[in-house]
Amino acid sequence: MRGLGADEAYWTGLAQGEVKVQRCSSCNHWHVPAVWRCGECGSWDLQWHTVAPRGRVFSWTRTWHEFGAPRELGLPFISVVVELDDAGGRRLMGTMADGRAEIQIGQPVEAEIIQTTFEGETIPALRWRPIAESATRAGESS
Amino acid sequence: MKRQPFCGSVSVAGLGLRQYKRGQAPMSEQGVLVRTIVDACEDAGIDPADVDGFVGYGDDHNEPVRLMSDLGTKELLLNTQIWGSGGGGIAATLGVAAAAIATGQANTVVVFRALVQSNSGRMSAAVMRHHLNAHIVGAGVLAPAVNCAIRAQRLFEHHKVPRSVAEELVRVSYYHGSRNPEAMSYGKDLDVDVYRSARWISEPFRLFDCSRENDGAGAIVLTSTERAKDLRRKPIRVLGVANGTEKGWGDLAENDLQYGSAGFRPVARRLWQQTGLSPKDVDVVQLYENFSAQGVMSLIDHGFCTFENAADFIRFENLIAPSGKLPVNTSGGNFAHGFIHGFGTVIEAVRVLRGESANPVPDAKVCLLAGGPGAPTVSSALFGTEDL
Image 1 (tube, rainbow over the protein chains, first blue to last red):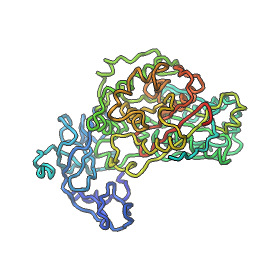
Image 2 (cartoon, rainbow over the protein chains, first blue to last red):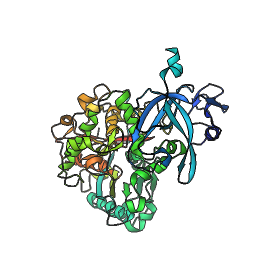
Image 3 (cartoon, rainbow over the protein chains, first blue to last red):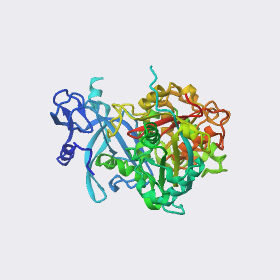
Image 4 (cartoon, chains in turn brown, green):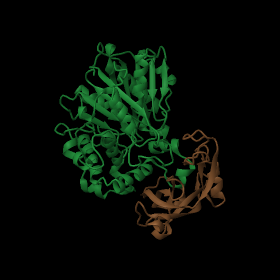
């Protein structure tokens, strides 16, 4: 179930309480999904960097229908795609802590790591919460 | 841009479609498929035993070699399926079939899809199973509806396409479906109040923004146009096919660059390049709408309109046959005609050019089949009554 190929360090990171994203040591390109070889420059030298679990909501949906999602998510729940502040614009997925909250694209958010269960397997996941605009890097610089 | 000719000279000679309510097919998946392939061969006026190639998509379970005893197949020369689980591969099948015929690797090729719930389970779950990984499971993305809803939200909220255009498209499909005796929604108009107050599935999708699911099978017979001219039915040419994607789109855990898109921009570009045609040359469109917003994105990606003017173009009056400027989904599409993984859109692309549609488009010469949207790889095809 892990399975995007080269992302084992991402899951190890979550198990240790950290969000890690892969970056090419040669051309500095951030890779999500993780790769074995950097297709941008051909380098095989890829490093994992711990990044702040903060970003902005890139898009979202609130699901009301029971499709068999992990029970820890409840119903309704909000799935989000979040553009990380510190990873070259790469995005990670997750859910919002409050499935009934108002939400908009661009909302600054911060993640904690939760455990979900699917078909008997424990899967760590990101649970995001809204934070104040001033808490983000973009907010500080504006 | 210089035209790159497609292998042309290949036509659809016959078609078959057997569609049932979900869970109500009278036979197993393979049984329905065999009946449908024989229907298509009878429509073409050929012996099923002479079919020597098969192309499928969508992780179809019916490996062609298992059909040989039923069909009496003499030789199996082409035996393949398009990568990727979803309807994204639907039109790509035609390109593989045409390439094989044009290069002499096969002579008579059947493109097919079969789905019966008691064999393959709920279709949405079967499609999603192909894509599941821990990233999306942990985010609750357990169905195509959820994934497509996230992209739809971007279309509406970020690109500011009005939500009303999705409603227009749904109304068009149901309008045509209500006039098509073969459609699941035959005789039933979609009440706009019912549409607007239907239960939420995944915001912004309510129930009628989602395609249905049906049991059944669809098949078309392709052969050289030269041979097709001697068969029973008027040949409908495959003018061009494009499939795939480009850098920045694919299986990227939601890191696609053109996010509020259905993924067709590079595919459409190559389709127009191959054929020398453009959106203004298209008389009618069969649009694979798994979800309403993805249908809207598909029309935008193919160049019929833009984010900015989508609301001017995607209007009910503009898209209905016979009076609309560009009739779309003349059978009722996946919403209203029925959904055997989109195969009804292929069938209708041929029927409308034969002049057999329940909602005819007078003098239609070119039909676009815009395949399954939003998949990591997508495909489209152009059909024509005449050679280019």
